[in-house]
Length: 484
Length: 96
Image 1 (cartoon, one colour):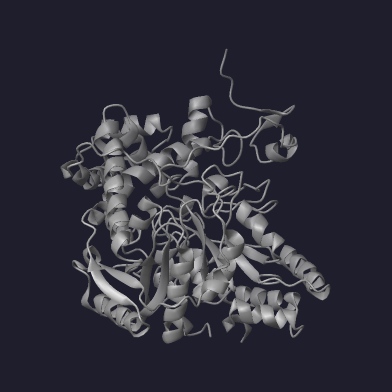
Image 2: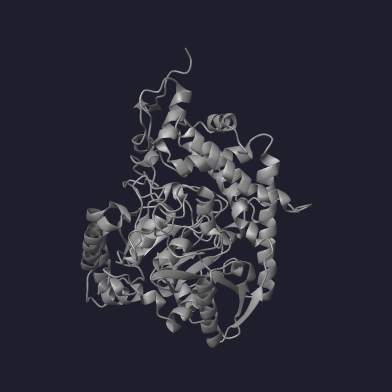
């Protein structure tokens, strides 16, 4: 079936004229219509616009133009501004917001001829690890619809798991691409901080946020990232480093590659999870890599560090939502302060308000040094640990998540327990490193992920290592029942 | 509880967030548990470590020529505003 083909195979079929982009787009739109009601993965469908873009791609193909993504459908996480299309960020406060311009990621994919099918559900303002904080209701995991898909890119991940698109964009502030990719059995990459432009990507925590992609395979991720990445003068954190031809570099030999096993990730790790990682390491050794244990002593402090830094930055970024220039406004405000307070109080959900207040507290007079400045110092210690580790190894590996997907409602009332879901992914964000998750097996019939972390701008190495793992294993080909 | 109701009321005011009566106890308890959780950082020896604000140490902010590169999109942008009059954003009266 078309939805189980790789992006490369689909591009070949489009190029050979065996199928048109309009037909391919129609195939995925029909799947979305049939399967999305049970998942709630998409919150906006852009059917008409998709068919128009597909027809335009077909004209470009007919004129002889070729491109890795020309005529390939995708779903955008609803955090990316899309000109003329509602961009809600999963929040009531932006429920009526029609973006007046495209994010750079959207512009680049559009120019490459990729076809947007719609916008994916997400945790409100990307704050969550279960996709339960969305104003539009929870997303369901296609492997078991009583369970969460992870978050915050939960709609993107569920859509990939259910094969509703060839690829979906995502963002990752503390694990929001890698954790849901792991819990839905798909591949996800969070590039180096600054690798992909954030212009038009609604801000959560500016020293951590990065855009990336969720796909079926590492080879597909390479094709998409090559288009998404690159310098953008409109983003002051965009880094002017040339983008390698990722698809051409997938076969770089793994012989002699030094892979470090993160000792801290194995303390208290569930035995079945540890066994999956051990098996993945065995695969890597059979491919010629050398594996060794490394220690990052400050890494266990990642979660408390993150839950000072990220809320602090969010409290500042989300101050722009004031009920004046765009978004939700409360009814009959009695004065300007009342307008601000009730528009924000009614417009934001419970978790977003909790994070804004946490951030306000750690930045407030008398607490700034003890919390915020302290967290920034510990952040440097964690980053230095990574730097030292990458003197000895080329890649670090470990589990992406502590457990498989949990039940909807199981952790939503206990924020600290929820925050600990991201215990293995946050470190890469604090240090600005690229990270990936690839399917590596199952626990109780639910998919699990292997996480790869590399030095800054080593996306080619991560993608190559993930691609060659996927040639030696079949986990990424498993599709949940009912979605074949 | 490491935070009192008064603390949370003050934080909510600083953040310009209205919190309903029934939500208040939930925030007092959950914010207290978060503050207790991150207090673990106070036990870490950080001596002369320099604080790290972002991962791009050494990257300088770029400057550009002060030239007009954007065209006027006022009408398009204001189409999203809750209340607009004669091209201006309308809010409740501030000065009597």
